[in-house]
Image 1: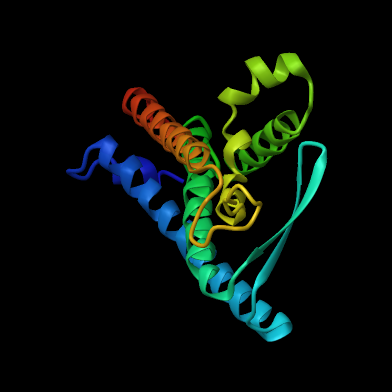
Image 2: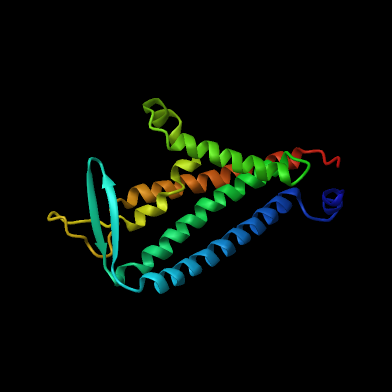
Length: 200
């Protein structure tokens, strides 16, 4: 409706416009996630009470049941939601990138949802050639890395170690890859938007 052309007549750079739009989407993402985190925590406390947590896990060919003590749960919960905030920010950054190519707001929303669905399906396929050559490049392969905060390390006797994470390097690498995707998507959006002719 011509609002973007009017906005770009103001003394702000196109880079600032994209960064502010990305910041707004980030704030909305964090606000929604914080609301979900608080609601999930209090509803689960009402339904299940406050006690130790049991984690059921299939690792390789065997099943495991790990017990996390009550005083070791809350920080894991907060860390998992912080990881989820990074993961959802990747999707927000993708939506910002796609919006640079569109003339309306519906197209980027639908395209973002479709890309996430298709990439999630590919990420969950167990095909060796895809595992080696495709999955490492898909951000959806790292979206559920938050689960790693609930995989507690064990000692030689198989007893859980309080305050430990089984595979911190994998979580750290996943976070790094997600952050790289955010930089890539927002950076590409800035480059394209700076060169784009605004005709509508």
